[in-house]
Amino acid sequence: MKNLKLGILKVSFFRQLVTLIIVLPLSVACSKQGDLSRRISNASDDRPVVLTTFTILADMARQVAGDRLQVKSITKPGAEIHGYEPSPRDLEQASNADLIVENGLGLELWARRFVQSAADVPTVTLTEGMQPLLIEGDAYAGKPNPHAWMSPLRAQGYVDRLVDAFSQLDPEGAQLYRDNGNSYKLQLENLDAELRNLLAVIPQKQRVLVSCEGAFSYLAQDYGFDEAYLWPVNAESQISPRRMARLIERVKNDQIPAVFCETTVSDKAQREVARASGARFGGSFYVDSLSKRNGPAPTLLDLQRHNVKLIRQGLAASAEKSS
Ligand SMILES: [Zn+2]
Image (cartoon, rainbow, N blue to C red):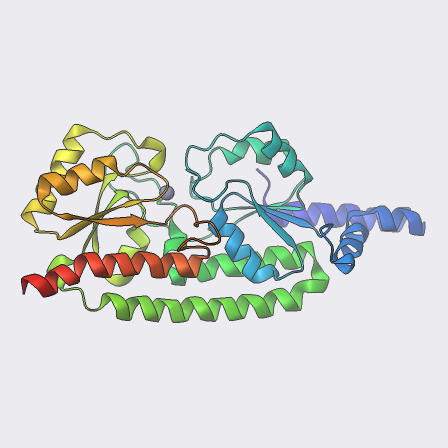
């Protein structure tokens, strides 16, 4: 896959060459940069297309781009994103995009195919340079946990990369992207404080977050929780009876009041854990996908508030009851 900086350097070198050698106005107007400016000033649906691999990145990209760029997501709300199979239409959409935005850390292995097929489209990896948390146990042991957007403070790093990538794609919009990025980063910082406050009511002994996928390592680390889950990554959502039995034991022994699952996978196994352990099934988190526009998690900020509300209801309310 192509590194964004190299890609854009290469493109701008090519542009300079085109501008130097062919000075005919017509040729300049036909160059990609000229084309971009024209499309932006039209402010129609002809605006440059930023294509993200999933809906959460699309929301973040929209916060930074405002109305200046057209942001689309390959996968739709509710899609399982780890084992997604891109369609021929996705591949076509990717090769017509002006910028591809991916998470990285091994999340979108399926995206390799369309990134390769769209070889001249620059790609930005939002976790590049980030020190990831590693997955513990199972076949994925030692691999990076890709769900870094679940930490509001780490999500600020995503915003910085979007600002840089958009500014390279469209230098005339750089100030707007910087301003939007700063205001969104402030919202993420406030969200971090808000979530910390909301979760402060949960007693130490009940700070165990039980989910289907091990997608909460970053959130757990930020807010002082242990985590336990049925499988490390959704791509391998095969439930091993041993893992399930271990989880039931853990929930029973630690008297964890509630267990949870996620909206993009079946909650059947976790409901069984709840039944067998005596815990309550506390609801489904949004993690890998936003909800539809009229659902409870149409943006990343809503998603975090929805999840933390469930965590608080599940783990703090029972504490109040039992104490
Ligand atoms: Zn996931």
